[in-house]
Structures are given as C-alpha cells and as structure tokens.
Image 1 (cartoon, helix red, strand yellow):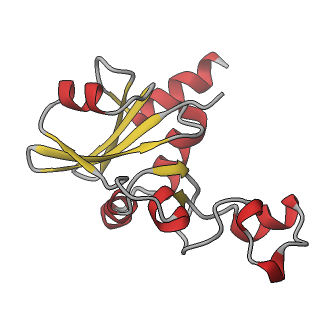
Image 2: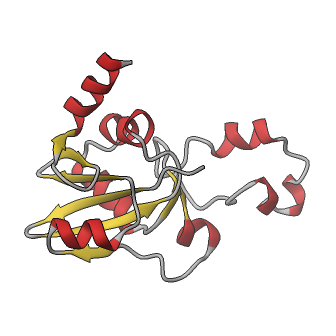
Length: 152
C-alpha cells in the first residue's frame, strides 16, 4: 500500500506543493529530501514538475513510467536493468506519463495544504530548511528523522 505525501516549497506567504504517491514515510521520502534536495533551486525544480509517482535522489530526465512503457527496442530489459537505468530518477505523472492536471498547487496556510492534498506526511522547505508534519504541528525534518532512528 502506498504512503502518500505532499512536498512543497514556501515562496513568501504561499506554499507551492505537489502530491507524491509512493514511500512518503520519513525513512524514505523524508531522508531523500533531506539528503538530496537541500538546495532550494533543486527543491523548486522538483515541485515545478508537478505530482510525483516516486521520489528518487535525482530529478533526472523524461523516462518510461514503468517497464511496461519501454519502447520496442528496450522491451527485453529486466526489472533489475530498468531499476539500474532509471531507478535513481524521480518519476513524475506529467513529464514521464504525459498526464495532465498534475501541476503544483498553491496554498496560503497549513489548513489549505492539509485539506488540499491527500497525504499522510507533509514536507515543506522554508528558507532552505525542510520541515515535516502529519497534519498538525511542524517539526524540523532532520530532528524527526533522528528521533525515528532512535526509536528503531
């Protein structure tokens, strides 16, 4: 079962955010954001590309959405080969599957964000720092990950 998350970046008093379908929990999306998207420009680029199927360390380039979408000349590629070639790239609904209506959304307060994206975790970058919420209070993402690691 998927763990949905929202990923956003603050721009003044508004948050531009996207939906992410897979692996939204702290130990995956939280860690990937903290370790690979701490640069504001990269985080902004990520959100600008719209809703995400699966977050990966790199934004990457347009690629097949799944092994079933491979072009004819690549159809003999195994799942492992697919993961090796494309697994380090984030998969977007718009860029990689040509879906429409998956652009980022703009929110003006926490309540709008929490109601506007069906997610279990909300990740928002503010002034170059990642924060996380499960729909109530915000915590520094780095502290939330450290706390979760202590418990495990």
